[in-house]
Length: 113
Image 1 (tube, helix red, strand yellow):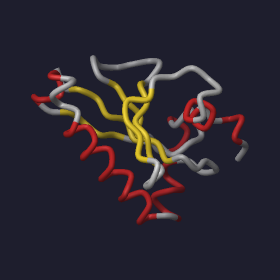
Image 2: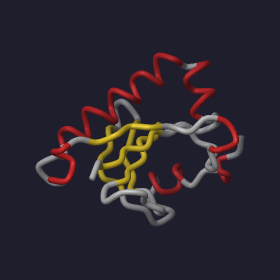
Image 3: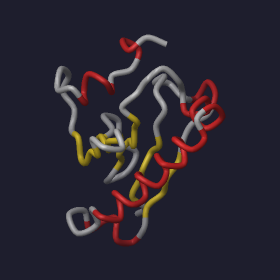
């Protein structure tokens, strides 16, 4: 899979616009605001590396996938003071198969309203 198919590497490097909410350069994960939000808070938890979709990451790199889940939940919890809408809860979801339109492993974090 080509890097050009995923916008996230260029957002993370600053070459393309995008809002990075949080990043962990040691673990190589980031939270990025979704450009087509489905809730008041809609972030994408992404690994820095590209080359596989979410289902492939879960199947072929299971430990890395679980680390991404942990990052998404712990970082979102850490940001509840800055984003009070998250204090009532949030959802973490991911797409599998043809519904995954951007070919880059990611988890969606959505505020519950």
